Length: 106
Image (cartoon, rainbow, N blue to C red; front, side, top):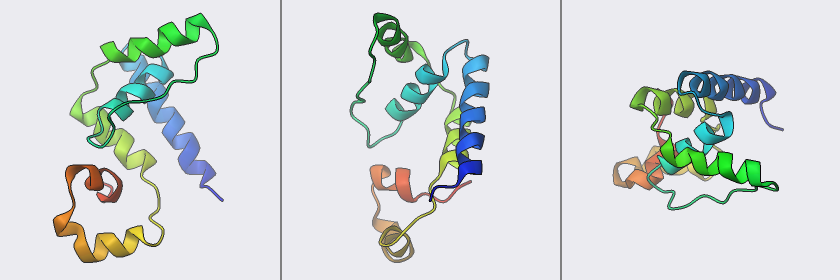
């Protein structure tokens, strides 16, 4: 089961950052994913033209490092095996993409 409190904390943080950037929560979520080193593209699930236009607006959202850090902290998953094992044993060899998952919450 997922941590429901973490889910709502994440949503509140996304909405707060969206408000500060005059953007929609969907745009902030997509901009956050595009800011991650291991992500080369995102798949949007728009069913209406308005949703697609809103999603494409994520290309114009520039998140500050502090925004990305806040989202990293609030949304960091609890590591399950084998990820906690990898983080303990080989963290020094991780690429930037690996660190996106394994970096400890700051």
